[in-house]
Structures are given as structure tokens and as C-alpha cells.
Image (cartoon, rainbow, N blue to C red):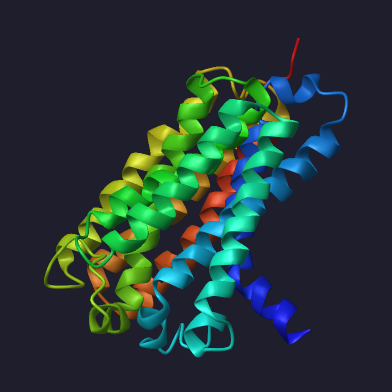
Amino acid sequence: MSRIRDYWTLTKPSLSILVVFSSVVSFMLTRGYESFADPLYRILSLFAGGFLVTGSANAINQCVEKDTDAGMKRTASRPIASGRMSVQAGWVFAILTGIVGVCWLGWVFNLLTASLAAFSLFLYAFIYTPMKKVSSLAVLMGAIPGALPCLIGWTAGEGELSLGGWIVFAFQFFWQFPHFWAIAWVAHRDYSAVGFKLLPSDQGPTRFTALQTVLYSLLLVPVTLMPFFTGICSYGSISGQVGLGMVIVSNGFMIARCVQLYRGMEVAQARRVMFGSYLYLPVVMLSWLLSKTPIA
């Protein structure tokens, strides 16, 4: 049981589930989703395939960062960093789950969806992961595979890269900047000790970094409203009006958290941005789903 638990931990299940959640909601926002005769099977297939691919990327991350993880208190107990699992076993697990996940998405959905999943896996594991010790631009690079699950979900439903897919991609792309900078702020000492460069300033947590979180939270406002002006969502019904109201309130909540960080410059406020962002993302996406324009 302990070995099974270690393999489960290797996938970073909480992170993987959040990633797959955004992919599934993006899939359900498509018009194509409603044309499937077996929507539940499709949702479960997307969840399973997406989880395997994301879990594979997370496992590779832990294989590559074995020594780095061992040097941080927060991650020292991970299976590979602690020595409970060999790097070789981690690689075998990662390769198998990655191949199965990509192939499954291609089999159930389409080649474009599988290709995007493989590309996301490659970017996260082999570009973003080593880049964290090179430049703070790693956050920008990491935001691409971090947002691709939305595009993967969209193409699973539509079979093409249409406007709606780019909107949901943009939402999760911009969301990651205040989210990751808040994490890097909270874990700055650990990250600095192992050479991670994830904050936009070389001086660490600064007012410039806090200002960046405010700017990106403001940028999220028009992005989150775009579905209501492109036909994906509608505010002509009560559910649509409730959904729109929830999006507006969520944006106000996120902006307020980032402004508090800018004013206070404390770890406690960065932690509020971090946890607030975890709440903000699913609330906005579920609000879109609540407001989805019905097929005439």
C-alpha cells in the first residue's frame, strides 16, 4: 500500500485534479459537447486521460528535481526526494502514464487533442522545469502548459482551435501569474536556497512584484467577460445573470486580494492571494458553465 501511495503522490493529485477540472469545464462549454451521445463517458475519458498526462509531467518534474526537492522542507518528503522511490522507477511510471494518457485522448477524441496534450507535457517537463533555475521567465513559459488543458478540453469538444478555446486558454494563462507569484512569495526562502528564480524582481518579494499581481488581476476582468460577448455565455436568463454576477464578484475578490498584497507586502497577504486564486478559478469557470448559451 505504501508503494501505491507513493505512485499516487508522484502525480501531485491535488494539482492534477485542478488542471483536469479546467479541461473538463472547457469541454462542457463547447457546442460539440452537447452533440455527443455519451457525454458522461467523454467527461470521464477526458478526466482520465488528462490526469494521466498531468501526472506524468508532475512525475518527470520530481525525477528532474530530486536534489532540489530534497533541499526544501516543503518537498523533502516526496517519494523520490526522500529516497523511498528510485529515479528509474519514477521515469518508468512517468513514461507509461504519459503514453497511455496521450494515446487515450487521441483514441476517444481526436489527434489535435492528443497532440496538444503531448506538447503540454513536453513544455512542462523539459522546458519549464529546468528553466526555473535560469530565469524568472520560467513563469511565462510554465503558464503555457498550465493553460493548455483548457485548449485541450475545447478541442476535445470542437475538434478545432476556435475563438472560444483561445478565450479559456487566455483566462488560465493570465490567472497563473498572480497565482505563481504568490506561491513564490510565500516560499521565497526555500526557493532562493535551491536557486529557483520565479519572482519578476531579482530582489525577491518587492512592491514591483505585488504591482504585477494587481495588473494581471485587472487584466483578467475583460478576459472573464469575453464569453458573454462572443456567444459562449449569455446573460439573457436568470442563470446567465447569476453567472455574470458571480464572475464580476469573483474579479472584485481577486483584485482586492492583490491590492491588499500591494499595500501590506506581507507573507500573510501573499498567502491570501494564493488561496484566493485557488477559489477564483473554479468559481469563474463554473459561472461560465451556469451561463452557457443554450443551443437553439
